Image 1 (tube, rainbow over the protein chains, first blue to last red):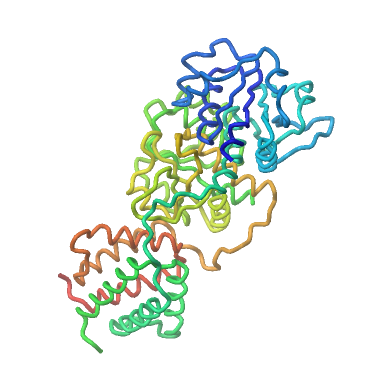
Image 2: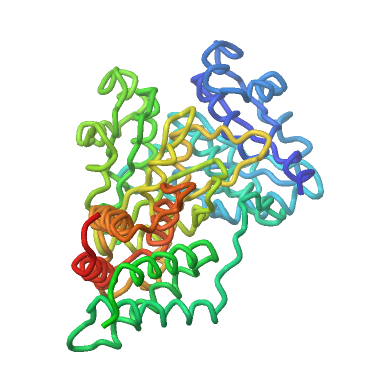
Length: 245
Length: 245
């Protein structure tokens, strides 16, 4: 699956602001992507703006492939997907980001896949969209659909990495405390009822209802052994300080 | 559902770079979110950097609520979720961005929901995480997990808007009884600590750890008003029966 990530290429077409290229590289690297192509990179790239925004992803900038036209950036690709915010007059297969991620990973098993991101102001041209197998649209509020370029790269890369990371066994580094057993929970509920009676706390109308609510609460919380011990220790301390009825 | 979006609040805690606040506002607005809170905003906010990166979302910056501490930013919230990149020593319920989006939209039907984003370098403190009901983690490549602040806001906001835009009917699992607010939970924790001290119950080695564990337990359980009243009523009954130290 990591091999598939290596085969997914982010192609930034006609980007105006070098800083956006850096931010896009950072977004990619967080999501396990490394292959960056730049079609007509702006004056000022490479440079300080891009490096600053890359924040440690400058290896992607250094390895980025620059091209004068789109064609060499997608020539060897079996799947090319263009991002667009607009409705096109010619209907195109429009993927959701999730569908785009799934199809990209599948196609990447066979060879390079290119995700195209257009200019900050105007996006991809119709001619560039014509080179795509499909178009992907990131849902945005119709009242404000001005997604930043690197943010768009972030969302599509995230959807890809989400699939990959879900398939990897996630290293569980958090110390696992065993859950309380059902038997132990029953002891807790008995103890709660005993101590509540002892201190004179009860719902005068529906006494059993209080215990039912607490059962539901602690059952839902799935108590671990530590938490159970704290609660029972507290109840025992209350018992010790209060005279029996 | 739009009403629910209005109830979801992005809380940026201790942000260092004003530009990141602008970029976060832009990310929010694209995804239909508008409520922005800033805890200890940086010198230079408001200012040109934030406005430039907001790129048209400057109405969110103008309406942003600034606070000196976290407490007023989350006081009225029924659900508080903290973002974290790190594994914590005490295990916390860790949501995926999708789970976070679903739970946020559900809880937002009852009242404000806060999504907390920490400092660029160091994230949220343990004390800030202690105020959360749950923690959300955006999956990133373990080799490079340096997600930009606005990129993190983008991903979580996107997952929320994805649900709204798909008009997927969110299963209404919210309890009929309103959830306890964060402020009420804080009163409960204070009361617990007071009563535990009163009856002489404490972990002799790590007294604060006991309270942290109980915070985690009750935060995770998302107490409703009834449950909160039962617990506080019980504590009050214990107080009445036990002499002060």
